[in-house]
View 1: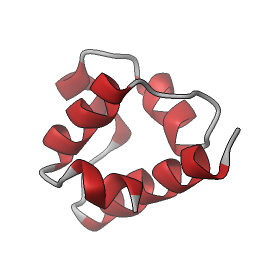
View 2 (view 1 turned 180 degrees about the vertical axis):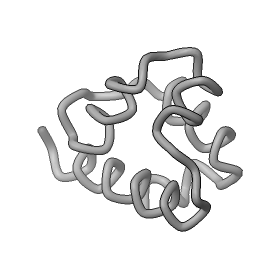
View 3 (view 1 turned 90 degrees about the vertical axis):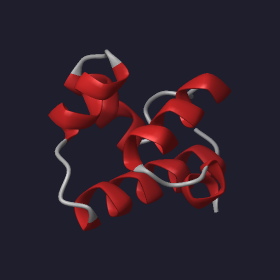
Amino acid sequence: MTDDVKKLGQNLKRIRIKKNITQVEIAKKLGVDRSFVSNLENAKTNPTLATITNLAQALGVSTNELLK
C-alpha cells in the first residue's frame, strides 16, 4: 500500500485510542465489520473517499486530521 494509506491507518488508530473508542464501536457507526476497521488501521485496504469522510465523522474529527 502507499504511504498515504499507512498514514491514514496510523492516524485512525491514534485518534481512536486517544478518544477511547474501540474498533467495534467505529465499525457499528460505519455499518461494517470490525475486521474492516482493523484492515484500515493496518493499511491492508484502500478506503474510498466516502469511507474516509464517514470515519472522520464517526471519530468527530476533520478528514484533514485523518489524512495529515
